[in-house]
Image 1 (cartoon, rainbow, N blue to C red):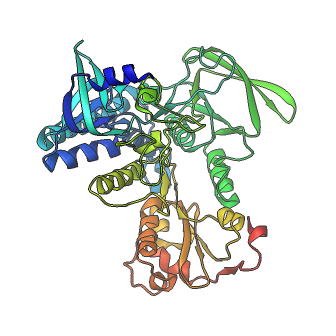
Image 2 (cartoon, rainbow, N blue to C red):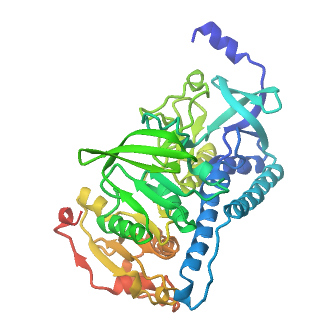
Image 3 (cartoon, rainbow, N blue to C red):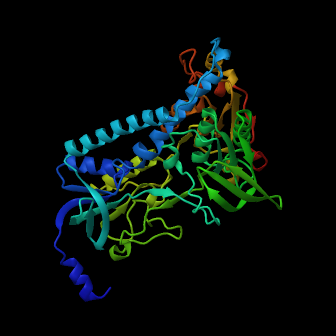
Length: 481
């Protein structure tokens, strides 16, 4: 850009705000509400989803659908609980309507929060036209220009479609379209064995669809420990979900919702499979195009995410990025922590992303939850540990629930600190949080071992876990990977 054009841009007439935010997702909305309540003038530009993807088309709606599938599974198991059932049917329109009712309530809450905080919500497309000016093409056809003393980019990510011949033309379901199904698919091919694919695969199977998961790697969630991946694969096969592993998809033909064929290569042999529906869960793509980032001096990484430092500052002065678009771990709770980092740094602090815990829960049934190191990670880093592990059946509460599948395990350092915890079991995320709090407090594992926890609860299982005989791996970490 020439000096003349730069001067022209700097002279753009625009409304002045203390903070202009692109996107209204988790971190962005809390930044807007917080600073607006402090008396700052804040504008938030949102293209479509008020409150971001989590309350509209991601975390919360998917868990709503998953819970409906859990209820369906109880009908399937009615006799196990001593209940005589003459059968049942799945009304997918009603499942969808329950989800939509929840989403509407959440959006209403967000609208009230914007109103009560004083942050201005603008529905439209925002694009940089200068280093500190965002032009907004409003949904009502008008245009506004906003000059921000600080600008925060939180535009998130979207479902990624691999470059496979015929895939885009097949119009596959993503997590967004799957949430709107009002008729149960007869059969579904799920491309991808990650969190999103596995959650929806199990839910659709429990509603009654025939489900097949196609995964390019040799196991589901291939980065997790072997006992985790084996446990998940056994669970899925027990529920009647077909798994095609080590498979490279070569092409797709047909139209999802009618008839679709996937051709893949496995062990050097080309095969094909047909289904009524195709669900693509092959990763995420950052929403960075058509933002005018080059005019603002905001650089991208080689993977297309906004380049930030540990303070979440971009390569341009007074421009910050937050959440998934900034390459942060793709969890809503991490986006919220990103907000706290930016909030404190805007106030003159020096808060960073480095060294923070990244817990996660995958809401299959049973859940998979982990915080801290896995065995695989400890081995790759050469970190010695003692392994504590018990089956979920050893936690007596699971027997009252008839939910005994899975295990809990923890990695403990020589100084008795907890390095990591994994739960593959009923309400694993809740149990994980108890361990995480102990890790945050720097408590030794003995504090949980010696605690008096209520009986019969799932958290009580932590006493049993840390009272069990450890597997010594202090000199054998590589083999345990």
